[in-house]
Image (cartoon, rainbow, N blue to C red; front, side, top):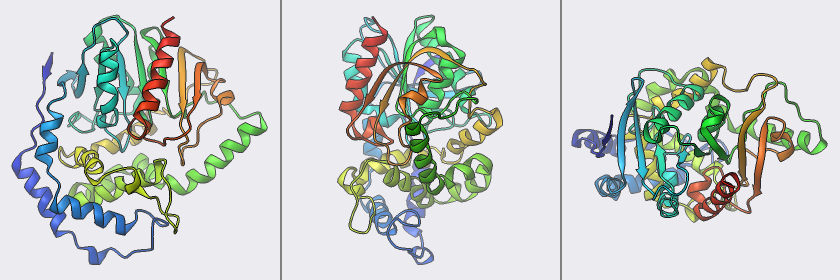
Length: 376
């Protein structure tokens, strides 16, 4: 059964969050200088000051409740999603976020796609935001099954299009592996999962992947922690809203396509406001989802879902939007084509890891071009 859903965080929960934000002891947090050793303390203090003094969750909640929110139970798991209805003239579209993003990344894509005729479905991934609590650890392969069941519940056997970034791209890729005939095609902005026997062969492939590995060696400590010991991290995350904010805010600063200041720090305020950053952060803090949202990393390891089996060729048509992500550098098309049936590939001039949020117009145009390609 699918039911309308109203977001309503209890007053007691909001009061507890506010009290902890106000009580955070900044004297215990030394500053290594700028963003070189992690989140920039000066910028984090600015964010938290706004949270403490000005942020109004209830106003945000009212705005979010204007969206068509729904909730359903799929195989024992609670799934929250937005469902904006089109006129049925074009295929349904499933939009999948990642960590530390949320369904809000796609907010500015929903109505344009619906107006164009698509039914648009934007879930909170299992364990994220209001798709919480979950029964246990869920990896991307299991999440892919749940997302397909959601679409089958809404649209029967009708074929659909999936768009995803970060975990959304990983899940979309597993959906294409498991259910290629259910998809009209899938469009991703992070190509990161390949057949296990695929290796770089050209000089360009080797150089790009080597350069990306060097960046990731500095930037993915969080990944190993969440993949192997999320429970230990969770002890701190569950008790500190400011701790959750710092953990997530760092990724917004380092992964978005941003100019830098004189000391090399990201100029995060040139792109994002305190309120929109806190809206995403509060979707982890307010519904107590900060811990369970990390479990997808652990689930990936338990599932062995980092790679497809040797010899895999994904049959569903794939499109890629290669935004200039500063950390997860875009995979060369030639390397992606060793696993995927690439029918659409666009090199975008700007936009980072949170592409649909950072550059919604570019993402919308590229997604619509891909849908036109696979709908011919």
